[in-house]
Length: 294
Image 1 (cartoon, rainbow, N blue to C red):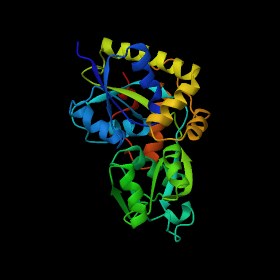
Image 2: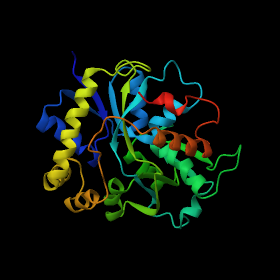
Image 3: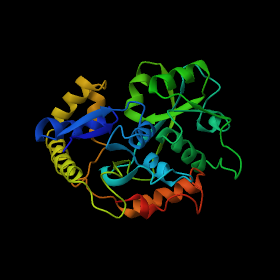
């Protein structure tokens, strides 16, 4: 059987996946997606990858919106991170008119892709701050910029007013003075899920043996991560462009599950209800939350 093609975001969160391959013989080709989960959704549907490890809200929005073609291309099969994600809200270093989160109402939001976590969380932020009016967009423009570097450039040039990205990935650009932090918002759900192509996890059917093997090796990678924090810090600081200090601080905030297989239905239904409230998904349309899980 062919080895799995696993899409992942090449950030600090990928460390247990790296350990699963390095120490426990995970037979897979790891395919980096620096532009994030929205790009992985496209790749799964194009049969370019078999597995994706990415953000909960983006996977659920991708299946829950109306008009999804065919069977949606993938299903939620596992849980990768149990803790919520801290999304930092950033603007340009020299944007004095932007003084607080309140100044962002009606502004231009930069996102990596439509349907990505950075896109979905813009609506969660708007809902959280009471900016949602039925039939009216909370922002004057949604600027699709694909990469983190493009997002940073856009808030400095004025092409976008703000964007949202994970806190520790953003932090060194605050430290260097390239961008400025305006605020933060946490996901109201556990932040990372594992999905499999419907060719490997058919709705109403069984899950491919290679996916079961992935869970077994990933669980060992997580256990190794938990038992060897300094090895994790060394890997992150040497390979993933974070300082050792920031890697150690991140370790205090993150919790991976001992068992990665399976998804709690209440996490998915809770996320769907918030995404409907935020206007990302439409009430009574799109895939039901129970259908999203195999």
